[in-house]
Length: 336
Ligand SMILES: C[S@@+](CC[C@H](N)C(=O)[O-])C[C@H]1O[C@@H](n2cnc3c(N)ncnc32)[C@H](O)[C@@H]1O
Image 1: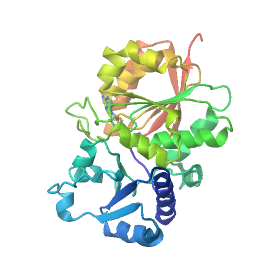
Image 2 (image 1 turned 45 degrees about the horizontal axis):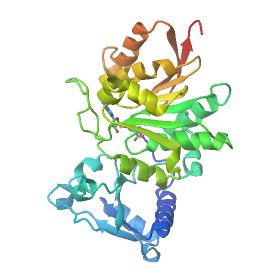
Image 3 (image 1 turned 45 degrees about the vertical axis):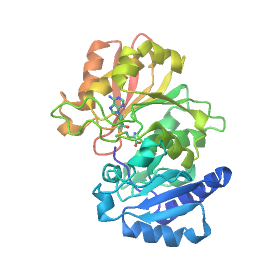
Image 4 (image 1 turned 120 degrees about the horizontal axis):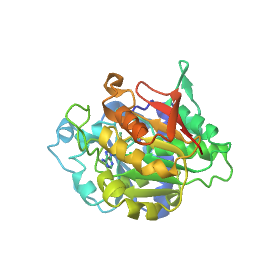
């Protein structure tokens, strides 16, 4: 997943801290922010005037913390640990430090360097950059595209800590006063599963938890009941237990399908699963479509090509590409 900082870090941090403080006011709990970069710690301290927020503790991670030598003791008054990092992969490094909290199912969420859209306004500010569409901009466009007759839901295969889910949710919120679309997330939340030898990912990358995904969504202002989760490896939820999953999500039509599970095997399972929900005009989005130098035999690209061969009633028409490897397509259902 490739994101871009769309707002000034200062604005983002201010908004984040006030959101955390207001969540804590309701529950009288505390939140621990672990800063992995001194620049972020200073920024958080000064910009957010932390001394005014008793419900927020700030800790600066040491090199030993980052190398996995230490594990934080779990303090039961802490409702979430927010990792202020300069890139999301720090999650892998800091994972060990937060292992106690993760084991206790306390949310552990990366919050900086790759800012999630805290509010509709924050990420709506910039939909294009240097003439190219940004990731949030693509979701904005997708929502606008779907506004006409393209009713239906947003189905996402690979959600991690909710960044793109939040982009989609806020895009639909902005264009519709009465947004009744459903937002359905499919994810193991234990990281990528099904990587083949020559795919540039590894099983377990992007491991998080459903609790973290939901907390991140709450920080981004998404009411908890607006997002349905189907949790588990796709080989279970979309294959072995497919009928159970169809029953769980109930009748749906896909307005937008976002495939962001990085590698071919789960991407193909996702396409097979959504087939009955696709209709004329559904939008298919792939985050890693052009990975592997656009090799037709690899990754999400190969999954789509195989799926098209097996389902000749469908064609896809290129719509927009929206970062170095991401592409979207309009679905045509023949004889519809
Ligand atoms: C790159 S992350 C998704 C990023 C996300 N869209 C965001 O905005 O941050 C890939 C996600 O796909 C999930 N995933 C990959 N393979 C999977 C599989 N076989 N079954 C279930 N989930 C899988 C991982 O758990 C991970 O959360």
